[in-house]
Amino acid sequence: KTEALSSQVKSSLRIAHSEVQALHQQLRSTEGSLDALREEHYVLVREKNLASDSVSDMITELSRVHEKVNSVEGVAKQTAEREINRRMSELSHKLHEKMANMDGRFDAHTAKMKSQ
Image 1 (spheres, helix red, strand yellow):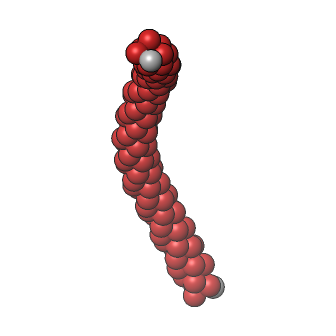
Image 2: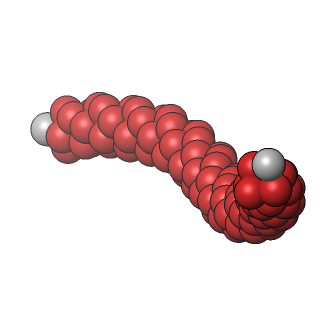
Image 3: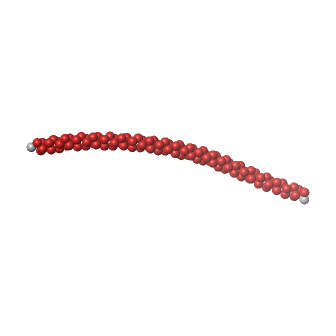
């Protein structure tokens, strides 16, 4: 009986040992998968941070470009206004000259008519 019991215990121990080895193998495999997932997570976090930095850089650059466009637009508007004012002043001066010339001709014509 002792021998049969000893044999059963040994058999149970072998089965338990095999099960423990299988569990260790599963644990190593799971740890390997977990390590791969961790590495993938770190890679994704790095890529996300790089993308976030890139977006921040683009927003900053767009802001600078927007400021430059507004500045150029303001300068162009001022230049156009100055040019329009200059041309209007020239036209006004020419108009006054023509009016004065016409007044002079009219006065000369009127004087000539009165003398006849």
